[in-house]
Image: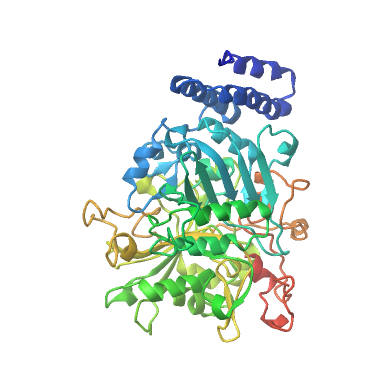
Length: 573
């Protein structure tokens, strides 16, 4: 016999009881106590109607905790959006202050993705850089899902919650070398009915990243689990996604990941139509040379990309939220490594590289942004580095996204592509956590026989040959109902910098240079202060260009000479 359900009004009583605390304690303790009551309500769900009422309570709590203007998605909307997103399954985050984004079929909120109408969650794994537990729990509550999860993180923004969370949540810090960054953004969701779903995005898991900025996400279809006696090769996709994803997970030595790797082994990934491209710290050569970083991208483009005879007129377009140290001129790294990689085609030897265009917000773009209104920023371009490479301004373009209502939502996504001269076709699209930097993308050493990487990064490559059975994606007119327009997050044609425009730059305080790059629960600081002193996505930037860094513990120092290591500024940026 089921027990009498707790009255939903107890949530209100619990909130009123917290009024005795000061304002700061009121906000922190109120959610904790309300969540405890909410969990009791969740555990005794007795009908669909009761669950819907529980979501209504969660919405009231979210509005009190985060403000009345917080955007709450339409209940049960994600299934329709996901079906409409085929065959790309590419989404952008909705923006709280941009109402136009609230009704777009490709705009999603975190709680919308995991809403209980998509299925009942059993467990979750989040692999990310920055995490805010209060916000994440609140999103699970809005989805009416139990927040049972493991979080691999680089920086925890509210570590005081460690001893207050009343759920089965495990936080695991991924320790890095002094100048590396655990920067991937991956989520795996396990559902009842023996199925999982994978999400790879550009977004950290904290409020500002999901509510105020432009983020990109790829979300897999549901992946059913194979029988336990299935062969190891069963359930592979035409893009070898499963193999590459498992190889990435194997780079973690945290035991909390092992069970999830076993789960991916059993997943039927045959419906996945994108390639997985990742970066992991270390020196990579021999058989692993083309496994990670920009060399992996080069290998895939060389094997599959097919452009018309005028390919040299198809520019390489890069967009990222952080600008690295590229060297004294365009040829130093951008042209010789990145543009060379992104010019690769199947069965073609590239003689003339295409034009390069780099989208990065100007000061004026930022001044008009939602981030500026709340005194925050997701952008990182160290002023000292900017002054040393002002040649880059010749390649810069403003952030403009008027057509889809995101010009004021600063881009934290990172994407790379090639587009036809008439802007009607796209050769490929690479969505990733990797900024345009050597630490994220890779630097070649020893006559291109060794690639050095500093960060964990993760992304997906969209190739039309595997998604549409065509050589290009349509950007203006659909080829057919099965080949719709591919959504770009920015406007075409691109908007060049005005003569008086300058890129948005950050000034690193001297006392921040010595700060530890990875925040632990004992030392973590709030997101706004963190963003003011360091790159949200990477690390503080010492101005010591001649020093070198030890990139890989346990590596024979004789294998790579000190002069061949990335300099500190190259690593950080």
